[in-house]
Length: 454
Image (cartoon, rainbow, N blue to C red; front, side, top):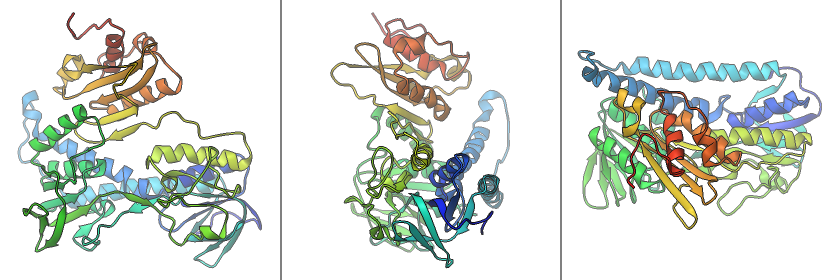
């Protein structure tokens, strides 16, 4: 598919139409560059079509069902609430389709030429597309993203699937085993458990092993209440007859096996060796602060350049790379990339809450918050870390709406805010966001709604 008129010489070629790529293309077009965007599958990439948006759509649906089942305490009586898996699937597909169409409209409105093809460098200023077209460019941005890692002995097939296919089931499996225990495993496991699937998680060490244990323990407790069984400190050995055998000798029922052990950068058949751009020992494209590769006409953004592999990081980098390609004096100099796990409760982080010399960490529980008590949702807290001068180093939020609340934390850290900046800012009442203000007030030694002792 080609939109608009293809000039003989393109100012900018963007390889990959995911969130990093299409944002870069739009920003470059806004600056007046002629832009070609090459995407072999769907505009919006994995985020819109297979990952972020679909998973949060299905999590929302599963939460609605869970709230209905738990509504009797509020005086609401609902009998025999059921799930229509096909309708749920159709809604999930239509959400992605609507967003993909939105991206296509934006590309057309900005006169961006879109090619449905794969691309490979055939030189430092040329791409060969699989549809037979050769693109000559002045600048290029690599935004090819990442792809799920396969596990030896558990190669993908109809029953052993990756996270993308786990979010495209149009039926409800009776049982599911998830290999891996990171945030993807927790999100998928929790949503399917709420929908009625018997879920087991196989963890090499433990669930969310890299995260704050105070937060993780709350999530694990909730997972346990949903019937999710975590097999910690073990690994899968084999799979047959809808059963997984583990290294500890036990066996797990698994109609479906989801392999969620991580992602690798996608640079397959990209022809990078035909340029001066380099890959590091892990296969990521090497870039500088301007997101330029060793070939200064070629830039790279998003998952393909390394951790954290998060869509919002790719979006910011797409803007920076487009402006750098245009010639603006810009750098990717963000201090913090917030992260969110859409678990139950949600966990959101910005900066570091590690306790160390000169850093104080203060915790405010949702059990002391009016909003939490009113909604019977007190399973969480806010932690705030600050140095001896009161400069905010990090904030962790474990709460409903943590995904929205963490933006305040990210802004505070980016702007170099101090505890009193948050404490003296009026937060609306009654909201979960007040917990951030309460944590800041407590860190200043003036707690209001929680007694820490003398």
